Image (cartoon, rainbow, N blue to C red; front, top):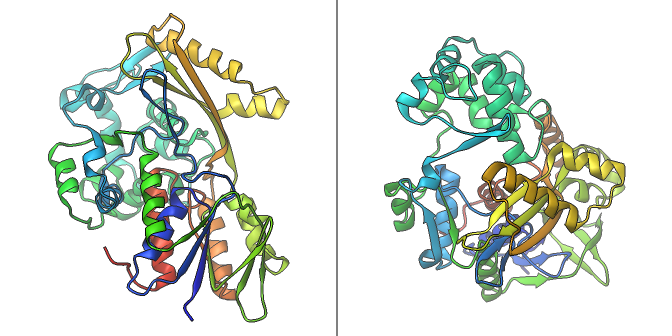
Length: 440
């Protein structure tokens, strides 16, 4: 009788893990368990009254690097090539980036000319920050905050303006708390390998071979900055679900996991609300803190390591304005939302809509009232890779290896919060369980 693998969590990581398990030459029996009534996790698309797509979560995926290419390969395997909507390199959206500082929007410099002249909000040409970076010695600490790393290598302005904004945009977090090693591993590795971040990136530090397909070649030729799907990004998890069903994967919705226990023969008992499952192996693609509460007493050290991986909430507000082809998406989070949550304030849709409209009016000049608004609060959706995050992961890996637990960790809690990272974590989890690469 073949093995049974239970995958916990029907977000994009769990779907990807199930997908790659199902494509093995001799696939195990796969059961995907999702606590809510829908799959896709934070990826959710809604069509507005005028036909516009409102993304309640991620609104685009970047095609860059090996992980971006792997996601495009997945899109092709699912037959979604004709649904892809790319932002090409010559599009204004790909060529213009802005920082909102001191009550004004500032275009980030581009090209060599932009680096050689002062560009507000920076007081000096960014060329000097690059020159400074090339002359700085390699850091000696095993980890460092993003702000400390950027300040040491690029100067206080780049750290406080550019890197702080990047951390808020990607992680809804504080650059003075987040880990450079875990949040931006390519920058950390570039310095460790080549002493300089710029040299390391130019020489391809950490670059890995990427797959090939017609869609990947098109993305490279047209220099896509990001892409979405014609019916919204939720088309991706929907296509994955269709594929899994066709491959005989059991998908259980509305079945929150209540606990995990190890049986005498080394198998898992997965307790659900109304029933239970037995599994030879479990892939957990649920948040680390949630998993920590499900583990048995004999895995208490693992539970402690996982419970220390926290997450923050983000409100996504879509504002549709008359005459505009696309809705404006405003993400609200960070210390502002954390303070509201801690104070016990009622987090109403009206509060988020008002704050989003104020931001759109102040930063984009959209003074009129929106014709349509959609608010969605994602509770504890973005894990925070704070200083020393790598040590938590190492403690978890060592415990799993020492006790030979048939448990594999996947998802945004560990090594990347972007959609590409989550899909890759699911693939890697499947490879770990199968002991070999699944068929492409």
